[in-house]
Image (tube, rainbow, N blue to C red; front, side, top):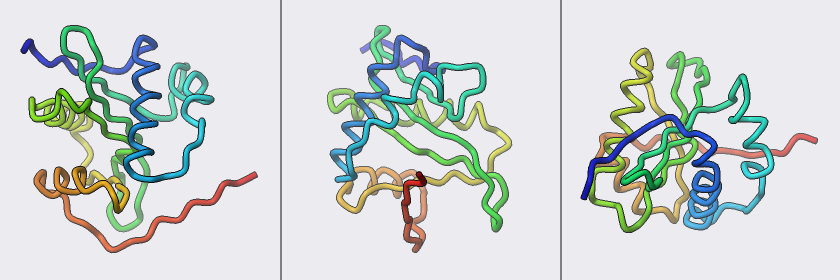
Length: 147
């Protein structure tokens, strides 16, 4: 296998990012919306992106991604929020996830706290997060669409 390259997502990665989001929603059994697909141009491929995205490539083919942003949590200060993490099934166990995480850390050296959420059904991701040293916290997340 050739080297894994991690880079900032560009327009060539658009379909992969949208596809990855749909797979993640299926695994987490979350409601399907087309929010990312409908808004990715104005929210990411613009002058002032609302989020960041790293893509891992092998032979110039996207095989994994991390979509993230920053927010402020009163107890901890600035937090890097990982919204999406995905690696294609056939490329798992090749170090793609760790390459993505290492690039994320390299580009966000000032961040001391990283947070994410995963569905109760997504046991694989929970196992990976625990292996990586993440601790589960006892919070419930609520979601309300503002109109």
